[in-house]
Amino acid sequence: MPVEIRLLAWSCFLGLVHIVAASYSGLQQRGGLAWAAGNREGKTPEVTGAAARLEKASKNFFETFPIFAALVLACVATGRHNTAVVLGAYLYFFARLAYLPIYGFGVPKIRSIVWGVSIVGILFVLWGLFIKILPY
Image 1: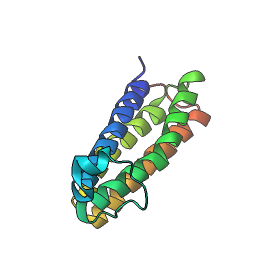
Image 2: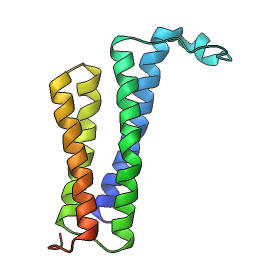
Image 3: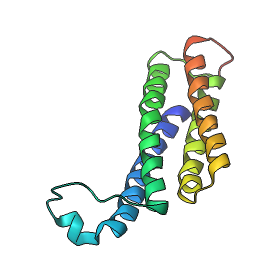
Image 4: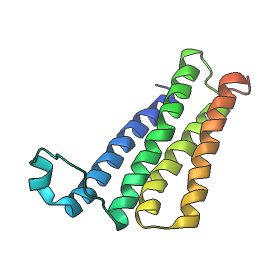
C-alpha cells in the first residue's frame, strides 16, 4: 500500500477524532446526554471556550480534507508516487494532527503556522500530481 494512501486512511481516522472531540466537548456545555437524546428543536445552544475552538477546528479540517483526499486519490490513480506527493501527505497529516490540540488549547499564532504547513502539504501533493520528479 502506498504511503500516501496510508496517510489518507490515518487522516480519515483523524477526521473521526475531530468529530468526537468537538461533539463531546460541546455536549458537556449543551446539557449532556439528555440534550443529545432529545429532539433538538429550536436553536442549538452556543458553546464557548475550548468546546467552541474544537468545533471550529473540526469545521476547518473538513474544509481542507476533501481537497487532500481527492489529490491523493488522483495521484494514486495516475501512478504519481513521487517525493512531492509523499512529502505533501506527511506534511498535511502531521500538521492536521498537531492542529487539533493547538486550536483546542487556544494557541493562536502557532495554530496559523500549523494550518499553513497543512496547506503547503496540499500544494506539494498537487505539484506532485502534475510535475514528474524523482520517484520516492
